[in-house]
Length: 319
Image (tube, rainbow, N blue to C red; front, side):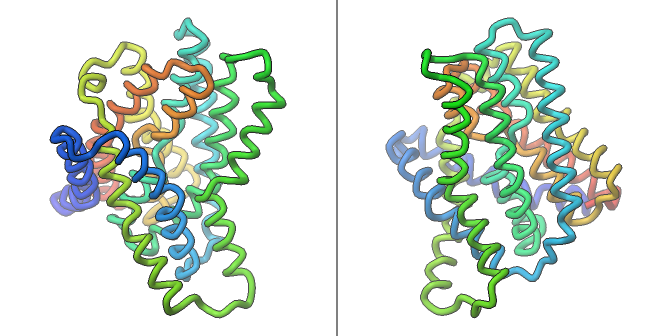
């Protein structure tokens, strides 16, 4: 059990340390909102795509064996989405709160917290598997987010056609998805391996991705919002921190997952609410204050939940 606890601390503590560094820098005035916005944009548009592209291109992982993992991830996402929808319709009164609540439950921060934790736990192999998983499930996340947030229309021009056009445009211009598709195409074609200046430059950008993203996440934490969550944000946080990981474990066991694949599934699903959930909620007329509260609370508390879950699964020999 001690080894399991050490394993959990090892994979979670570096992420927490970088997040608290970002929070410390923000409190000292060393990380302004302009810096956070620009650094986050840099990570999203350049560093993370390089990380995903080269992690897939350089790997020897048999992606055919990941079909079960991906199917389980899709099933878990639908279970969380449908369950949160039923709960919201019955217990959440305001339409502008319902979609935000649902998104807070099913949408996890795979691209930053999830990938960083998987990399700490399993190295390059886990990172490659996590990148493929994230690429597929991210598409589903965006589609479901538009569906649930469409309860609130900001204008008469906001129709299902416009929303569908928006989501297609987002998917076709998403740097992370483009990087993954490019990597799969490159591996499928009889092309020589990437070496030299191109690979070295890509490695340098990739090395920046997760540390800088975690620092920005920490600098974005609103301590006041986190310490004063509303009842509704607490309910959504419980769904994200407690219920989501338990469902992932149950479904994963039902499909016979174990080892790295169970670990990737758990760490990706158990991650805090995605930062993009706040941006999308605000853009589509949802309750952005509720979205910020869910994001802040799950970002900090969810890390401890990931550590407890990882230690338990490790002790049971499941990851």
